[in-house]
Image 1 (cartoon, rainbow, N blue to C red):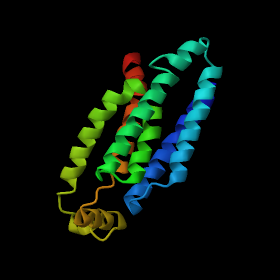
Image 2: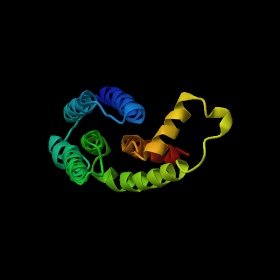
Image 3: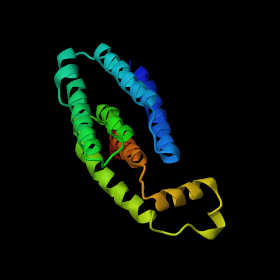
Length: 178
């Protein structure tokens, strides 16, 4: 079951990256991507339950599926509130649900800190001029368009904070092995 969870996590990372790229290119996050991420989490939860020796702990512990669901719902409500105040787009608000599911309850604080840090770095980077030798490249032309429109694709920032948060347990494990 652990291999299935790893495959699901890999697929989720790919979908999160696609959502970030889509938001960067079009300022839109497709509903199909959000639904696919939620479905992947459901499959991951089933795999964790089937592979668990203690189903109660897997379901109801704050580090288990219950904590993940609580984090997902809390973040989704936050996203809807930010959307209602027109601070976020609808796609960004919807993306908070799968991010909360995959980050989990114990990842909420690191996610918030990383989100703040990456957001500040992004806003500062958008103030820098694009170097002339690369200004003609499509990526930098899009950055210039984002700068001029003053519309930030928050999904990109959210995804990178989520991916770093999801990677933290692996980083901690590698540091402990040394």
